[in-house]
Length: 342
Image (cartoon, rainbow, N blue to C red; front, side, top):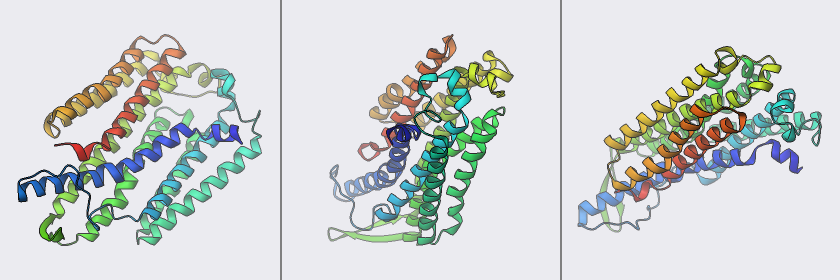
């Protein structure tokens, strides 16, 4: 059972779960609390750093539905990790023989059964949330994710670029999915252009335009997830060249060479850094964001780029990928601090 859990890559699953919570509790609730704090300061001349959102102003997706949505996402990701290792046994025996689980401590039929059970459970959970809130069309998201992870593991992983882009897209879907439910339901709750609410005996106005600004945050996180995952996938391909070549894969470093793969990773890292600098300069001008983004996110990105540029063996490429993952985790953590921004 422990080895089956290892196949699911629990650390990656934890990051996925934290990303979903970050959208709900950080981007949505954090920005609402921050906005109301500013509004109260305007009304009575005092700041309210300890403000607690009144009933009806928090995220609109019920907690039970949010848990099911998170469970759906995590289960599907776990199933994808298992099926990926199932079809990658030959490659892993070359690249990381000490970490091969399928066919050794976990039988192949057990791994396949676990994939099917987790995928079905994830699909049912996601479809139920979509049905419960009258958004049946979003049931396509878990179905698309399951199908994409299967296609990726069986064939697209071995194709040039397309497999990397697919994994990056699926990663970007994590914050986007939470935003699709949370913000859509908020827009339904505040359907009027201006909604008047009462708190503490005083009335104040909620601008629906403010809620729509949350889309900017969600899309920014989705874009960061897409680009950083794309870079990390290329870094992994550079680390796994030996096994991938033996399996007949056409990854970027095999088809175009290590030089072009390195260039691709560095260029996209540069795009991420430039985007973060722009966001920091235009939208987040406070000193805390300046230092957090500069040291906590851009710092690991630059270190990852440096290791990628100088890497000459598998261990250094793996280290570069781990630094990219650290930057992703720090970006997720920033969402929980939004409520404290001035």
